[in-house]
Length: 150
Image 1 (spheres, rainbow, N blue to C red):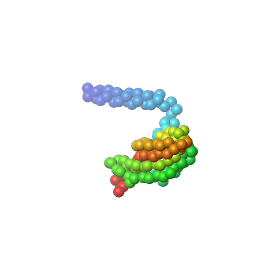
Image 2: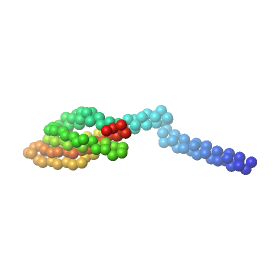
Image 3: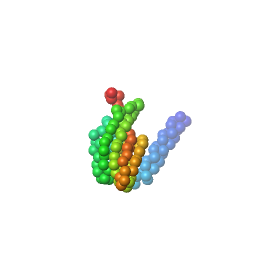
Image 4: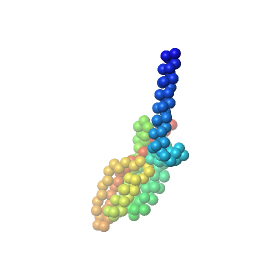
């Protein structure tokens, strides 16, 4: 009998704990489950954009060129290295040769930093050429590697 009472008390405590967790969730998300599901879907989308399942290098180049045009940055050349890999990530190093004025370059770098794709700035060299700045930007973009990748 004592064992059954103990089991019942344990079960009641488990249900009370679950109720507290649910109550905390509802307080944190008063808009309800549908809005929370939408939020999770958006977070998953952003994570897949930041770290896609494949390189999506073509899409990255399109985005890079659009960002350059938007900010009046002239892309002279873009060079990429072969991807390097660890257990879960592949990294592609990209070297961008550009020409721009100071504020255009500043806006371009800010937009790259704010992009949805995970971008790491490795190096930046700039040389003044009268009214413009000529330089090289080294960045890395990442994507998830699978066991099937070679």
